Image 1 (cartoon, rainbow, N blue to C red):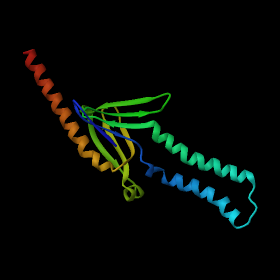
Image 2: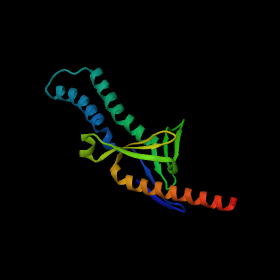
Image 3: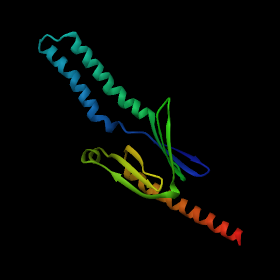
Image 4: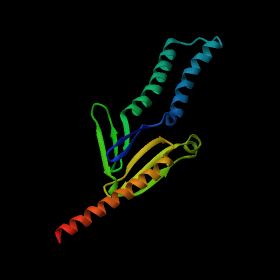
Length: 165
């Protein structure tokens, strides 16, 4: 999590937590442990089993890391931005002035490891900030930003009405 001060207030950048990939890491290590254990027990292990195990280990580590690298969540005082991709990038921008609700999703496993997902519901559609560390700590911040955005929108509306009169 990185915070930086701007004229408009703090900006928080989030990445997917590695905790979300623990089952994948474990499975990849388990698949490598099988030929290693067989070899240690003096069984004949063919070369292709070592190659497949190496590929599974490599993919089991690199694919989650690529997903982490290619997904960034940014929360500013005025918007939530989700960026996915590297070469072809998809960016979802939702102003906080149209947020209707913020939901927290955590399975039992996620609660034990203190990570989960936030779903930010807006009139334009939902935005999911998935698999982040300590998601409950960001709910009050988002709610404060939503309230501030609503107050700014109300004050702009009042100024426009005064200028129109």
